[in-house]
Structures are given as structure tokens and as C-alpha cells.
Image 1 (cartoon, rainbow, N blue to C red):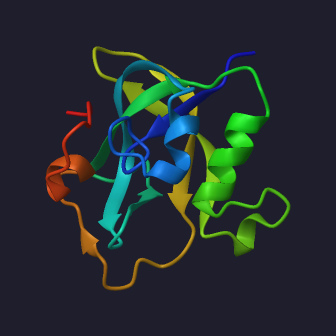
Image 2 (image 1 turned 180 degrees about the vertical axis):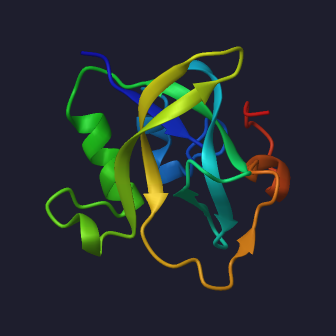
Length: 140
């Protein structure tokens, strides 16, 4: 069974930090997409909080994960997600329906912020790369 991953921030191709860039290159791009929720600028990285009833959306891109355990484990480690202790993790990896630009939906893994964003800035249009002026992001 094919697994998909929705990325919306610093893990997008061209934006990934050196320590995770090799892992990100193993992902196969599928299409641009969005998910309902709120996106916060947490300083060095963004944090998504899913909310299907939100009027706002988070822009990103869907990737196919390679058929191995190492890629997802490496991403989990980078994102501070411990599958054995999800409640204590900085980010949680959850499955969520993602709306594809051009129509349709796909169930994807997504890393969501697992804390209260407190006074972090809301990225009003949900596009982190545009918000931060980061080049290399293919999300609209």
C-alpha cells in the first residue's frame, strides 16, 4: 500500500535543512494540495493545527513515501515525533484527508504541531514559504 505525506514548510524540496535534505530527496512529488486548519510561524519552522471546520487552509505538497521504514523513521526523528510516546512529542504524525488542487482528496500523513502555539504569529494565507520569503517551495 502506498503512503503519502503532506508537507507545508521547511521540509519542502529546496527548503530542507542539511541534516534532513538527503531523506527529503527520497520523496516523490505528486501534486500541490491544501488542508483545512491554521498555520503558525514558530520561528525556525511552521506548525500546523488541523481544523476541518476552519475558514483557513494550509498550502503544501503531497509526496509519495518510498517503500521503506527508514525514510519515515528519519522524518519522525527530525520532527520530534516518537510513535511510542505521541502525547509527549513536539509534532504528531497523523493521517488526514488532503484536498488536491484540481480536485479530489487523498489520505496523507501530516506532521501537526502538538503544543499550544501561544503567541506565535498566524500565517494568515497558510503559505509558509510565501510568508517567510523562502525560495524553492513549489506550493502555491
